[in-house]
Length: 409
Image (cartoon, rainbow, N blue to C red; front, side):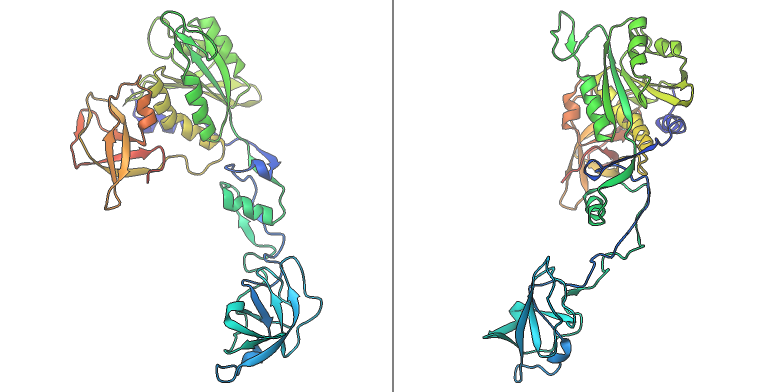
């Protein structure tokens, strides 16, 4: 058996970034930029008001005070989406609304609550500084500014920025297409009716959801029976994918044919058996392809928890690398055990825990219950995976590193 870190190193050494494609902006969320973006314009494109108020010349208010207020004639109006029909001159003010372009001749805005009205005029009882409540042209960005670098993950703010620059299309790195195969005579896919000794297929659907969450495009390759030829045929359906995952049939039993099927397809095996629980029997191989990059294939264990945990540790980082992401690992936090967290046996444990936040702002961890690799509900309850060395118990009050699977508040 090899260590988790060495296994991941071998995997990532054989996984490269995919090519790019141009997509509509509406399909670019959570994608990785394949180009650097330079601003094509100033934002805002002209000085505008940050308040509802009155545009004026600050020089007209220089001597204004409570004892000697200044009276300015209101002789224009500027709303957002419109421009003044003439320049503002000395002794007058224009009514202006938030986002309205500053009229020529004006250099500042006074909020409406800071003035009083007197017929068709306003009364100003304090000096107004040049630039008050004005958003200058180019305050956000200037034409020619580099605003987003290649490799940037596009979130809501980046989407808004691209839209503000008029980018209806954007070049992003391609999402990995991932084939998912479940194996086993005991597995019946959804829509079927399990017979004696059979169960419904869950691995395909949990793995496809994990793929989608990691930015991939899942493709079901169905369920293969425990026959070498059937497994090989199903794997062949995934040869046009960017990565393939199978579950079950990867141990040393008489009906474990996945590794043999991969050998028939010319695969080169790079690892098998990792020092961890759950999930010791995991294989990673690559299938050469003429004129194309080698196809990475993960053969995961069949138990539902083992499949999900090994996906988290090995497949997810590989998918993120394929998609061009810079950050491949989930956050790791230190948590204080609320009750003993025991890992019997010599293999390193990745134990399902719930997390809470204590009064001091630190994390608290507690096992979800039975850690059997067949208890799928333990993954439903898990906020993270506590990493515990073999033959070790983290006693109550002790700290343990936890891989965060979801945000905890």
